[in-house]
Amino acid sequence: MDKRPPRLPSSKRPDIHGDSAVLTPPSAASPEEPDEQHTGDVPQGYLRLVDDIDDDAAGPDAAEEPGDGSLGRAWRAQQAERRAERITKFWGIFEGGNPYTNYWLVLGATIALAAFGLTMVLSSTSVDGGGQPFTTATRQAVWAGIGVIGMLFMTVIPTRWMGWIGWAAMIIASVLLALVAFSPWGYTGGGSTNWLRIGPVQGQPSEVAKLALVLWGAAVLARKGKLVNQFTHWMMPFVAPGALSVLVLVLAGGDLGTSLVIILIAAALLFTAGIGMRWFALAGLFASGAVALLMWITPYRMMRVYAWLGMNCDHPTEPCYQTEQGLFALASGGFWGVGLGQSRQKWDYIPEVHNDFIFTIIGEELGLLGTVTVLGLFAVLVVGIFRVANGITGDTYHARFVKLVCIGIIAWIVGQAFINIAMVTGLIPVVGVPLPFISYGGSALTVALIAVGVILNFARRQRIEARTPKRRNRKRRKRSTLTPPATSAPS
Image (cartoon, rainbow, N blue to C red; front, side, top):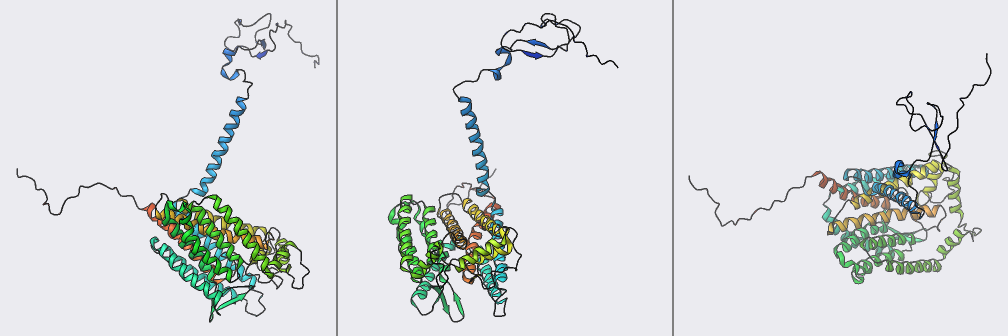
């Protein structure tokens, strides 16, 4: 076998003119004919070296780039435009949707949260020392049934009744709050008097006051229209005497947590109505000072603040015990949890575990996956309510009323859930606010379901309007009833 290296064709190298050259393949048209572009003695069929291509032959893409940075600025502007388009598409998920989807989003998320809450109440109270593990869960289920009936009732009633229902609910709630604060029927528990007990029936009128404030406040502010921008029109009668009277009556019973929710609802309604931001800054400073003063003058509240700061955990009453045990429950759950019904901290380690600290049992038994599921259901509910609010167009009384009610209920549910979760995770001191739809409490669950029924009423009306074709408003000439109809002349 011949192992000699192959011989290369000998040829002169062409002179290269310019700074660079380009290797080009031979012409495929006629290999036998000599190419006029070949230079020197370069054989036919081999790559040849050519000078730089002229700018005119290269086209516009080969033009020299400007050195002022305009191309970079154009590229950044194009990227910013693409990001804006992606954000707009993503935000369209929250603003878009059709009335049919919005209705089922709100209803499905509500039923899922209520069923999840009943399950966790049963799990957290199944170790009751009284030997009746199903008593508390059964009572909660009865209240849930009443709430579902109220939700269905609010779904089918005419929408124009909502404003009058708000006025009636505001009067009833004020009377019940006054009975709680200034009558012997008020029941004290957990350091505050916020229950009304008449015979075997016991409930929290403050929960009714939340829904009443949303409906009544929305009706008042929507009736004001553009005049709401003036100080006297949004101050009276919504803030004073409306929201302030409810707030004072709740504070008279010593319920600071519900007072914070009332403030959130009032602030959300005023913000949606279009109040100037300077008033929110002044109100925020005043509210912060008032809350700090209430904590300072109340011994058991200051003890909770010290416990949150870790300053008196060695106190004989063990103020840090409940928070520490709740954090232990969340930490021991991990990602998957120890299993439904297998919690160890619910065996009298966490006081009132089925009320304010039920989120810790969710984290222990169902892990991080369970807690994220709860947060996801709240997010779906909020998106559905926001879509219902965004589906109303125009500047009529009805449109303003629907938007105010939707934003008020969002502030109520989301604000209360945030306060509860922040409390059990140690972000804020213990204030005693239940987790909506999940914590034990018949009046809280019933009123929350009725509030969702109001949203479903708006969504149902949007479904009916979307399904009914719009009739053409033909202008017909009005004819007097005294004028006889025209008769055709005989032919």
